[in-house]
Image (cartoon, rainbow, N blue to C red; front, top):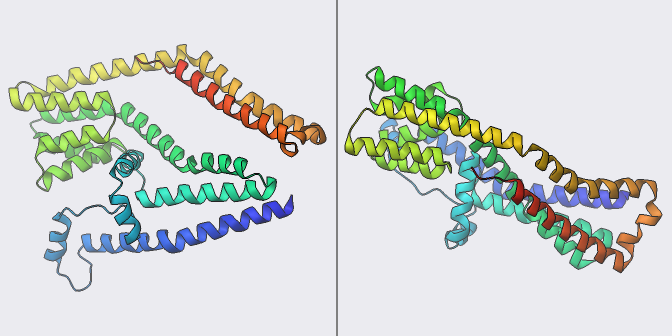
Length: 324
């Protein structure tokens, strides 16, 4: 057991060492230089030139490695959804870094399973599943951030409506929301305010906000504001009504979660129980359970069982995910 752990530690150390040397370190240096340039501290440039550089819309690189960046730019069907996912998660990460991290994790899992079992198909299966773990983590982070935005959004709309009643302009109200509320609502409204402040038309900045936040409430907000700008009316009253509707939808969503709590807990038990039972039986009777990974028939049984377990978990998740 000790050689396997040592080999796994060495492989992971080498992979993450190469990742830091080739990707993380150049990207950190590039971001540091960018921050200095935005603050007007770049050597050999004046403050006016630095400010001019901040107003120039440069294309966001997909990777700190030039060759990988050129390769990813030809794969827009993959890079565009991945970039939007990273933006929703609020991570300071490039598409290239995420994809290389997936490859590194997949190779590490493949090497570990291959060294322990010498079964290439099992190692390939585990490596393929492990390669998606970083993307799954980013998706989980994006989902949590979106849920937090949904919870804070009615308060942001109320603050914006109060600013309009006080006589402030709509852009000033966006700035107040960005300053008063925390991330993620404050960050998203700050980005929308900065974009329109640097020359982007307000409708385009609001549509970009609706695209970044995959919520129906955010699209309602954008549609209501754009409709009022074209047709006129009392925007503060419209925002008050919208905040009330969003709060009611949020209340219904929590009621649905309460009603489906029993089904969700049952799904978790059915998903975790076989794995936990296998671990307990391995500890109690390792010689008996070792047939599952030493005998070819046992290995095939484990592969089929894991496949059925994943399929069943996905079906249960689909059943308890009630749309409202």
